Length: 139
Image (tube, rainbow, N blue to C red; front, side, top):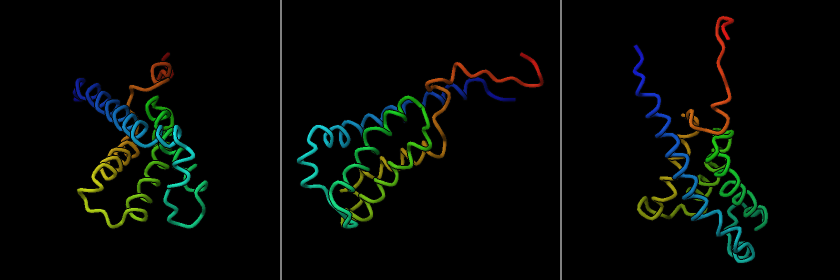
């Protein structure tokens, strides 16, 4: 028999993970890139030699647009992928010399968004209350 108290707790936990991880990423990394675009463009690392614009714009998309979708629970798994990609590039190519202690924020964000990519958004998301499930022809 399924425990009725488990699902609401899981949904609450996934909502908290979505909200806290996305707000941290948005506040600490995303908004500063947008608000100080010119300065960020001048100092952004370019690990693959593609140019600063090509390095900064995907980072902004991953750190500003994707967290908004994740907070709302819209396309959460898909929205986690660019974030995971940017974090992996940052941790493995831009800052490979960092110790675990120096890179702990990045690794923790990577763990959080990988967990959301695996688990999904949970039921506490935009649009989840409108969907009704119909089985066996019952309305």
